[in-house]
Structures are given as structure tokens and as C-alpha cells.
Image (cartoon, rainbow over all chains, first blue to last red; front, side, top):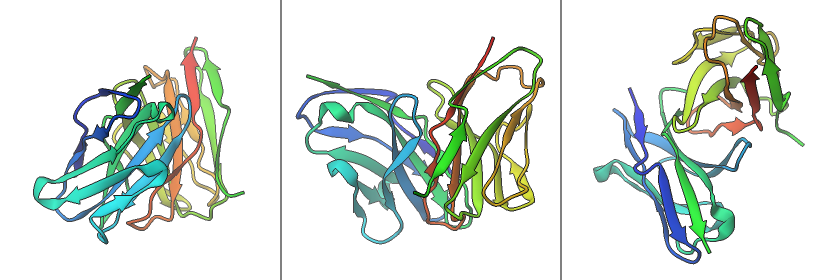
Length: 113
Length: 113
């Protein structure tokens, strides 16, 4: 069974600082990986996805993530945090045999002025 | 515009009552999903359907029921057997084949009064 672990349920950064949200997965086969963002009382929006092409994936709003098979990681980064980035972020995995997404527990990002 | 529509946005239920949450999509997606979201617990899968007239239980199906009579509709009924139904419910759909992502509705917040 596949699973996703997001280290740190809350992350706080200053505006303009680097954002790093951690995601590790376990899967018996090379997975497909996704990052979603959720603003309060809304659904999830896709930030980016890894589908076995380039290991460095660029998404919307200057977010990017790097797939590292040796570390089973797919950490999300952004060079410079903006106040509007404050939200909850979810990492998710889907194996190439199934159709279901398995989500991590989420990380709430807070951005300080 | 294509998308997923959940209704209502807010729903109040008395103890012992069944309530039905609506989810409609016009993306022509085969697969549809229901997730429950509680603070600090991420998203947990309730039911999913990969094709019309077929659906499977997810991780927390007890106290819930679904139907999939039409491709575009996947309503969720929260029955009186669900002991703690207060939560945020998210519906999603996807083309059903990895590595495609899931698209989410805006959610329904259910509160038991």
C-alpha cells in the first residue's frame, strides 16, 4: 500500500523567505506525485504534478518540486514567499496501477510580514 | 466552463437524520470520489466510482452511501449510522487513468446540530 508523509503540520516563514514543504512517499512502484493547495473553506487546486518525465517540476505561482527516487521525496519549494501563499498544502501519490489519490496529512503554511 | 459543483456549501443536520450531498461534474470524467476532511487529518477517502453503476468503498465508508446512476453525478448520503458526521466533504473527479490529476469541487461543510 502506498502512503504519504508530510513532515511538519505547520510551517511559518517570513515574507520573501524560501518556502520548503516536505513530502515523503512509500510506493512499491514508481508513483505519480501531486501537490495541491487549499485556501480556507475551498476545494483543492493543483499546483504541480510529477509523471515520470523531468524530475524537477515547475508549477503555478513559482512553486516547484523535485522528485528524488533515492530519498523517496517530493519536496515543494518556492524561492520567495508571498502573503498570498498562506494556505494548506497537500502532497498526494497515485501508483500507475490505480486511480486513487492517497493524501498526506497536510502542511499549513503561515507567512509573516 | 467545465468543473465540479458541490451543493449546498453549508448544511445543517439534526441527529438521526439522513442528508444527501450533491456532486455534479461536466468534465466528462469517468472517475469520481468523495473525501472527508477533518482538521489535522488530511483527506480520507469515503467512496469512489470508476464507471457508471459501479462504486467501491474507501477507507471510511461506514455510515455513508453513494450512487452513480449518471456519469456526471455522484451524490453522497450521510446516514444516521455515521456517528460523527460533522466535517468538510470534498468531491473530486478524474479521467480515471494514472497519471491524471483529480479536480475538486468547493466542498460542503456539514454540521450536526
